[in-house]
Amino acid sequence: MDLFAPALTQVIADDEGGIRYWPAFAARDEADAWFQMLRSGADWHTARRQMYDRMVDVPRLLASYGVDALPSSLPLADILARVRSFVPAPYNGIGMNLYRDGNDSVAMHNDKHHTLVPGQPISLVSLGEPRRMSIRAKTGNRQNMFIELEPGSLLVMSHASQITHEHGIPKTTRHVGPRMSIVFRVRPKGWADDY
Image (tube, rainbow, N blue to C red; front, top):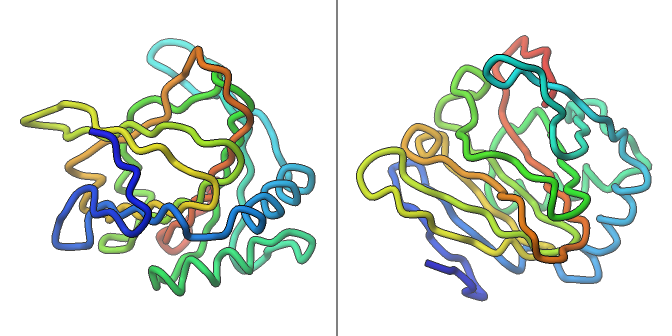
């Protein structure tokens, strides 16, 4: 199933709001300006993670910020205020991913429950070039749904959806330009890892 509706699309329903998608969260010129500022100014780094029995490179660049220490040179405070106007929550962390081309990806997963405050949403703003996200249920009909994440779009996932569904950005052989995700989360008190 492909979802390209111009207004809010309810992708998955649950008691906490499910998974919702706004393709036009920000105007294209505004989203492009955000992308350029963040691409050149964010503290991007590479990382390695344990995958089964070996260490592997994370196939994208990463950056993270606590909302109490956002650099004034970046538009993150403005984006956070816009996200809160759509989906109010006490977001306290921002994690960012830069997918440089079709080789960069994130495997199917759900956010780990111990890293989130129950009942609070995960809000994801997409910038740069469009990329396709896969979403599928963990049980029952495990057929993939696909959402083309447009520049300036907002995808919101409930905490409950992390229990029932998984999501990912697959690699692609199509020529795709760089794409960025800015992910707003509510982390538990004392959380000390990347946001």
